[in-house]
Amino acid sequence: MKSVAGVFVARVDAERAARRLSSIGLTNDQITLLAPGTSEQVSNEVRSVATDATEQPGMAKAMGGVIGAAAGMAGGFELGALVSAFIPGVGPVVALGLWGAAILGLAGAGAGVAAGAAVDDAASEGLPADELFVYEDALRHGRTVLIALCKDEATAASAHELLKAEGAETVDAARDEWWIGLRSAEQEHYLKLNKNFDKQEKFYRAGFEASLHAKNRCREFDQIASEMANHIEELHRRHPGAEVEDAYRRGYERGRTYYEALCAKTQAPAR
Image (cartoon, rainbow, N blue to C red; front, side, top):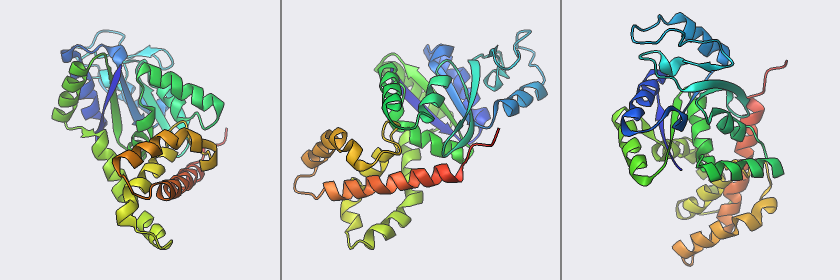
């Protein structure tokens, strides 16, 4: 499986795109929608929208089972089960679709052996563990993420073009937008260390992003250094003679601090 994702400013646009994915052969169990909010909020939205004339009777079933959730409001499109979770560093998030629980579980897995196993399982299914932090940033800003798991490259290319036509921002563009928002502060921090940020930014950023991978979160660099060796070696091959390790390590450490600050700012509500 290959994942294709799009980031939408408005959830209604993501819902429309989800319905259109069936035109290129994707089934509902290959589509997952992530949105900020709680299951109760989505439930209220479902109840507040009048049933469309094309919708089948009983589409808006009770929460907790298979539902014709918000993505099915205009024409009977049913993604399936709705699940919700409080994601550290993000807040309450809902997911609709077969893979929703797996993705939310991945986001909340934390670090350690259990998290590593969860990431490995996700990777084997084609779920985007390496893009998770981009989705989370989009959700923090009130956006909706649509993920399609495609069986082959041709279908993935078609899904990419469809999401683009529907107004989605690509994950790469969202990733760059995320970094632009952080870049000035990271440049200032790096320059205080008497380092050349412009020259070493790509390595610093690579380390920063590595710290946000679902498998590495909250782990110190010394804990993952052996696992990062191949990544660093690849950077050496692509940039011979460059000073990679120090910038990569410092970026990783800053990324870890960044994630911990997000988690501290976004605390789960007391039960």
